[in-house]
Length: 135
Image (tube, rainbow, N blue to C red; front, side):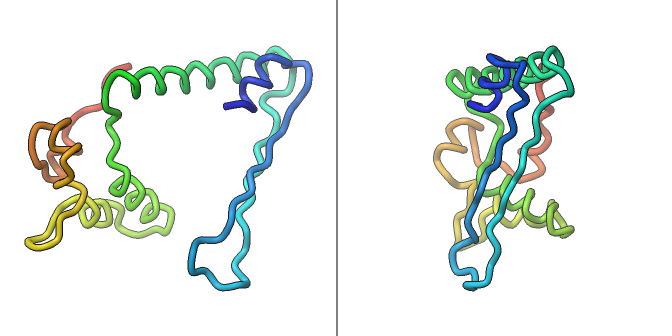
């Protein structure tokens, strides 16, 4: 967000960003570090300013929604879905495994905050059936 704000405030300068991460816990000593490079937005100052301002507006809208209503996000389930998609595995199966409780092991569907927001314990199919808002 700071990179976008810096780009919007000073579009005449093409700022780039680098994010460095560490290997997962338990990874071998030879595991590589993740580095994400974000190039400057756009080719000219006007384009950079416009793109940065649009993306900042999107982030501010997400923040505002999150402060007044629950976001349609189940953290563990969404992470399992994304990881499976990235690995080329069955994303729905991974999401279902993370969301739906078994007979003796509660999962994310049984968490009280999800029950409060959604009104009951929902299956993954019921959770996914809610269409995205038009905005």
